[in-house]
Amino acid sequence: MAYTGIKSVYGTEDLLPEQWGHWRRLYSAARRLFQLHGYGEVRTPVLEQTQLFVKGTGENTDVVQKEMYTFSTGAASGQKSEESIALRPEGTPPAIRSYLEHDLHKKGAFRKFYYIGPMFRHERPQKARLRQFHQLGVEAIGAASPLLDAETILLALDIFRQVGLERSVLWLNSIGCAECRPPFRDMLRAALAHHVDQLCGDCRKRMDTNVLRVYDCKNEGCQAVIQQLPVMTDYLCAQCAEHYRRVKQALTRAGVQFREEPRLVRGLDYYTRTVYEIKHPDLGARSTICGGGRYDGLVELLGGPSLPCVGFAIGAEATLLAMESELGPPDETAPGLDVYVVRFDDEAAEACFEMVEQLRRAGVAADMDYEGRSSRAQMRTANRLGASFCFLIGARELESEQVLIKNMEDGKQWTAEWQAAAKEIACHLQ
RNA sequence: GUGACCAUAGCUCAAAUGGUUAGAGCACCAGACUGUGGCUCUGGGGGUUGAGGGUUCGACUCCCUCUGGUCACCCCA
Image 1: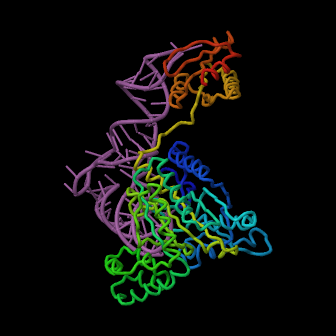
Image 2 (image 1 turned 30 degrees about the horizontal axis):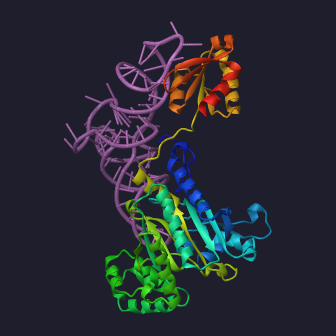
Image 3 (image 1 turned 90 degrees about the horizontal axis):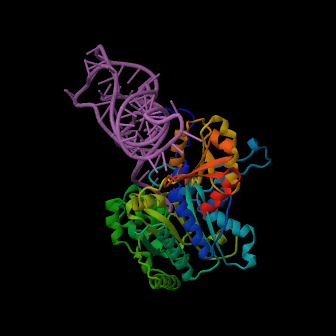
């Protein structure tokens, strides 16, 4: 409370060294599994041209209309032409852009990408939703096989299982394609028109902007209407229906439990056919820890050839909350110290410094006191840092050119020759 | 963008319907153990009660404004 200086920006947060436990676990499990499934990492800039998201994410989505951080280069940076730049609100358009910009479709169309990094959306922060948040995502570009949809789903579920989440559940749906969805949408709109008076204001707007989202409304009056409404899966074209059937079949064969949720829709414009969410029951209002699906029109929309595409994004912050709920708080692991070098007398400071360097050169994680604290205090620090050994150095050791070594676990002590001490302990630690 | 709620030590929380010097646990520091950690005991530092104003003899407590934050809505990972 005392701190009145400059604070972190609203909706952003720091991650301190002692808070990394679950993050590390999630990131390393994800990287291992991405690699195991044949996905290669693509790192794209945090900054993109605003147009990329206007076209890719969708001009009439809330993400683009009211949540995107944009600014204009120009006078300030002394450029001749101004361009509008955005902090990326999601990872899919940049990944596709990168794919196209490097002409990867000409080097054999099919590619599997993954990305990990911060995303930005200007909205009011709340649980599991920050203005700077982090996503881990994949994009499989260039194949329409339903088996590929299944692969991404299995991959996401694998990651959650690997990090210890056992209660996550998969919701699955198909929202059709450019052929079968528009007629269905019209039909839905017509059906809703009979019940306008029972709908909330939001839903009346949705009728014009994005009818399918009416399904998502939490208003009770709307829900009563919604339950009577027809459902996309009953009106899929033959190809989409077959595709959906094969996705489900592949999942079932893989032993995956899922919940068919015909009223599951997605907020971004580019989705086609398969859509899915993985939810965690402990999270409350925003329980989705992974959202994904197929977007067969996106590559073309961004100026590339007509290539189908499927992928997902895992929300890191939400997943971390789920992990805390299922696994408890992360271990506050110290940075793994092998040896703490303790100084008995001030005259030994330089010698201690030398020894620390010797240890580090021998590959031993070593540290010492720089605050001029008492030997007792240094020992306490060694203990708190979890050092396996202490090197104790004072006037006597300087005199005899030896080092007193203490095993911090059993308390046993012995002396070693100054020159050999670092190597001796390096062997000990192996 | 809309709404509700919260703000006391580094952390988690106390302080009866307004009443004297705002407390405790943990953490931190030190001593007991003058060249040795953990356990124990003893002591210590640390607060303009988020900021500003108001009501009152008297405000952590009531009222207003501001700031910061939390949760929910819209939307979304």
